[in-house]
Amino acid sequence: DIQLTQSPSSQSASVGDRVTITCQASQDIGNFLNWYQQKPGRAPILLIYDASNLEAGVPSRFSGSGSGTDFTFTISSLQPEDIATYYCQQYDNLWGATFGPGTKVDIK
Amino acid sequence: EVQLVESGGGLVQPGGSLRLSCAASGFTFSTSAMNWVRQAPGKGLEWVSGISGGGINIYYADSVRGRFTISRDNSKNTLYLQMNSLRAEDTAVYYCARDRVNVVVTALLHWGQGTLVTVSS
Image 1 (tube, rainbow over the protein chains, first blue to last red):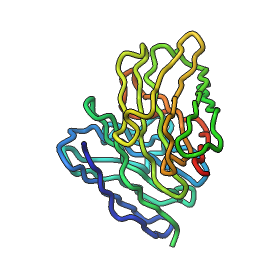
Image 2 (cartoon, chains in turn green, purple; image 1 turned 90 degrees about the horizontal axis):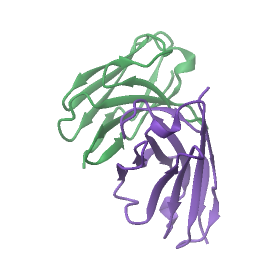
Image 3 (tube, rainbow over the protein chains, first blue to last red; image 1 turned 60 degrees about the vertical axis):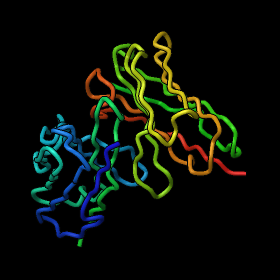
Image 4 (cartoon, chains in turn red, brown; image 1 turned 180 degrees about the vertical axis):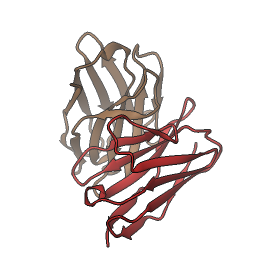
């Protein structure tokens, strides 16, 4: 099955900073990669689907890119409400789905 | 408004069984692919299982295959997860989640609030 790695595992940044998280797949997954935000005690929220598509209602400061094995998630200008853990997730019709280990983002 | 409400969690002994339910409303359940995702205390997300709208296509994570069974009753707009031979490592909050498109599994757009399963003696 396909494994995902994320880096960094945690990141501290100031309000207004650009934050970048990477996700690497153990094999080519095309663009079958999604990004979620999860705040403590809450269910995850889908932010980006199929590598680069912004889900409806999600602020435009969130973006995603990449294909194949290497993907990037970016917050262009960090806001206090963006403090959360971010997960990448891949899917395929052989094995189902896998989540990355998560990246915790907080305010410096 | 889409609503997913999980129930059935609780404390169970190792080796025991539990059945989770997820009551769905606000969308056409019978054509929607559905999933279970879990999160152990203080840990990350783990996809558990997915099922197509008609119940034909079913997938499981290796960690639960042979012990857990996903099913659905489209007449009741309800998703189920039958969990047998439970282990301590199955302790987690279990979320019900709807796929963004009517194919299992893709992007998980709608989530329930979760139900806690604790496996302990």
